Image 1: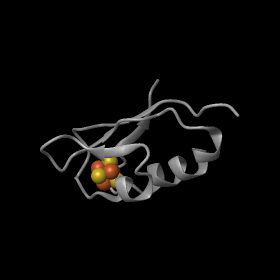
Image 2 (image 1 turned 90 degrees about the vertical axis):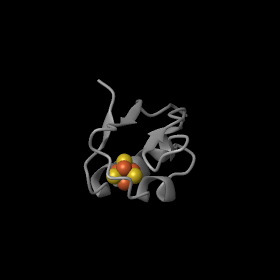
Image 3 (image 1 turned 120 degrees about the vertical axis):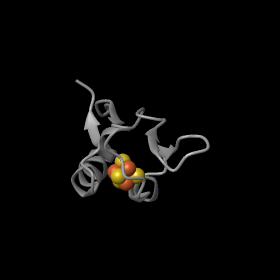
Image 4 (image 1 turned 180 degrees about the vertical axis):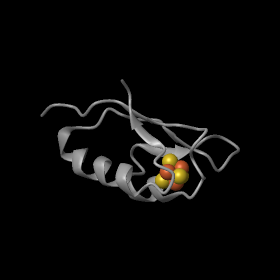
Length: 68
Ligand code: SF4
């Protein structure tokens, strides 16, 4: 099975709501010592694509983006 494209959290947009870490803890975590989210793992197979697309759409700050 293939891998999904890389994605990241724009730290200037993230409002620290925590939704992405709840939705996909395999990919998102808190930056050490902060509430801000970061992507620590994008090595995810294609079965994760719907979940990633959903949290991108659901993120209240639209802060989860594909890497260009
Ligand atoms: S869902 Fe969006 S705003 Fe909420 S913690 Fe994740 S990146 Fe930040």
